[in-house]
Length: 114
Figure 1 (tube, rainbow, N blue to C red):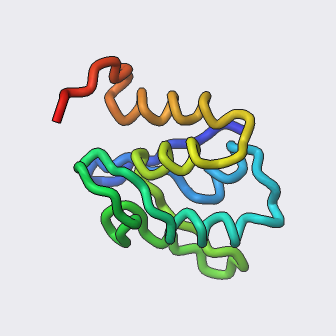
Figure 2: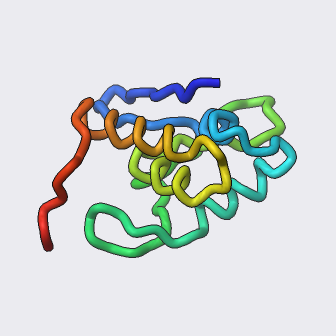
């Protein structure tokens, strides 16, 4: 399954949590536990801080009436950090893809020193 990147009216690029979970080939039975861990864990974001993901900044609930499973929209940066932290065998492929999409197809080879 390929990872589908969605774009909002304001231009924010996101992926859905269910799509990310399936693309990383993680067990379906662990979806709920994985998403809870993803949204409560600490990550090092590019804004210079080590913090937990913030609602409406790094992720948002995806409204799906009638569906038994909760879903979320996740920013590309958070999705990349999540992918790198999973036990998936294809995590590097998707982390590189998310990084390239986030930088408009340009690989970030050089990171400015702080």
